[in-house]
Length: 187
View 1 (tube, rainbow, N blue to C red):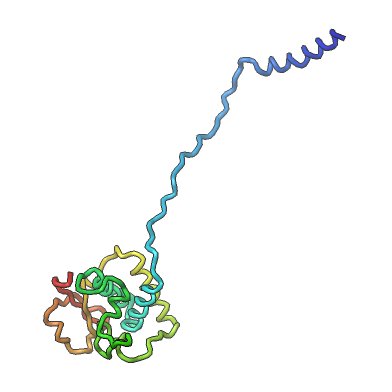
View 2 (view 1 turned 60 degrees about the vertical axis):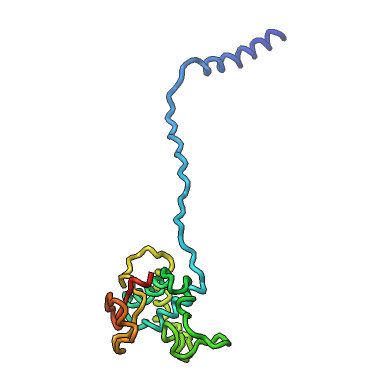
């Protein structure tokens, strides 16, 4: 019986010892990828109230203008926000002007005529509105774009005679139906 157990042990051990000889084989293992953390861009989160104010301003001031005309109108809002003379929020700039005690704007006494012209300010939700929202989103999302108004903080339609404030500011550019103005005193 001992002989049978010894024979079985030898039969089991011998194959393993030859399999584990000092002979090695080179096996290629692909290198492990180095860990690269995902870098998320710091995308500006757009306040829906600001987006609505900017979209309405672009829509009511320049809905039928070219994309450049829409961008220029929106850029004036951003330029005003950067100035110490104006509010520092989108809606603050757009709704700036004299108001009654009940909060309603006094007719024709505000910065943007559509806001205090006494009309119902509800845009038609068609192509012109969608384009206005698209331009507003572009302007509010990335404020590092080129200012095509050259720093303008004022504008008026070209079919209106120069307002009295126009003599105190510098004309920068005319885009579509608007003439844009800037003043070194604005900042």
